[in-house]
Length: 163
Ligand code: THU
Image (cartoon, rainbow, N blue to C red; front, side, top):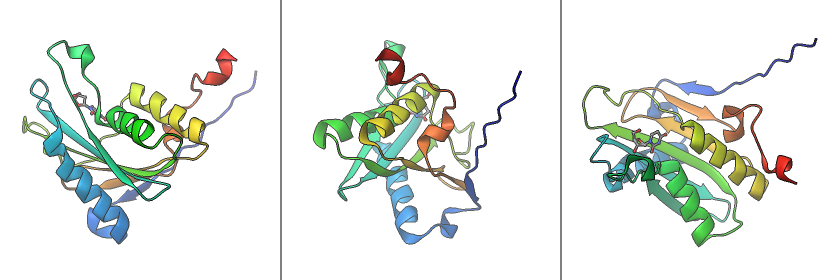
């Protein structure tokens, strides 16, 4: 028997003020884009803004449905926008923010992508052969920077298995 270890490291900033200007601006945009969310059921609005390798900026927000499983997260909306409008163009960075209108959570800490979004981010990275950097923050509070989205999904199931 062999034991394998998987190392995961990411950056933790005390607030958006510690970020460089470009990263801070992207996270601010993600916060603003939460207004486009359609989240009448969860009242949890998520916004994502990306910079592509070509320099374009695109955004996504969560879009829910009365048939709950038909809802889609902000991250996967954004990935669909990217590959529909700019097919084949890698994504450099995605900033993700949220506002919890329930007020239970004060939107004062980062959230990280759900499991399905991790799977989609990983496949986008492998399709475009470039890692996606993630900037995660709430309306206020700490900010996490994850250098490569694939680090969030060790031992992933990939297209390699289907060849
Ligand atoms: N959601 C996202 O859009 N992104 C995440 O990273 C986590 C959750 C959405 C899905 C649903 O519309 C609402 O937030 C509550 O789960």
